[in-house]
Length: 115
Length: 115
Image (tube, rainbow over all chains, first blue to last red; front, side):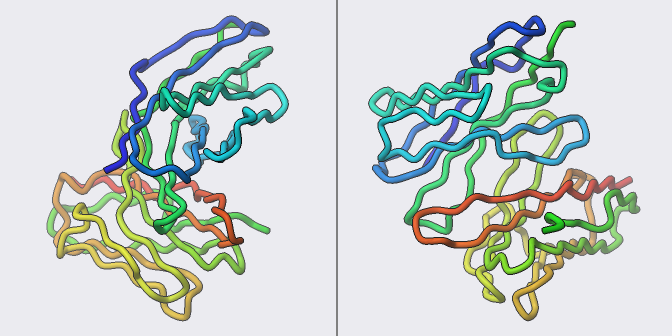
């Protein structure tokens, strides 16, 4: 079974600074996707970024980028120039292409941004 | 594209009562998922539909839970004889299969409190 581990329950960052959120996963599959979702206090889960396992290049979306280490099964999210609106829970998630594409989530990390 | 909508957003019910949640996916999305999320945890997969067919159910989905997706459009999740342990947020999500993988979009969730 696939598992996703987010070992840091909380992190804090100063506005305009950079923060990295960690995630590790376990799978025996070779073809899969990894995601970071953001869940603000309004509770709607929003996709931040996704990475296809077969792509070596790390995904980037504006201020958000990932460090994907396939051999180490590590998938961290870097948020640059942090903004107050980045404060939320962040979930790392895994999806195997051969299944129904259902997501397996980590427990999440609460990110606070200090003004 | 109006996003995934869920109704009701909040429901308080007495133990033993039945409740039903409705989800309207993004138009033309053929896949629909239900997840359950408790405070401080990541969402957990409950069940999945491709069009009108329910293709997978988690062990979390006891006999008191039933989900339907008639005509492959909206879906309902019914919980019979609710228990306090059913208190959680029930998230609906949808996606469109496009070959390699698909992005899953979430609704705002339906909060259930069983008293």
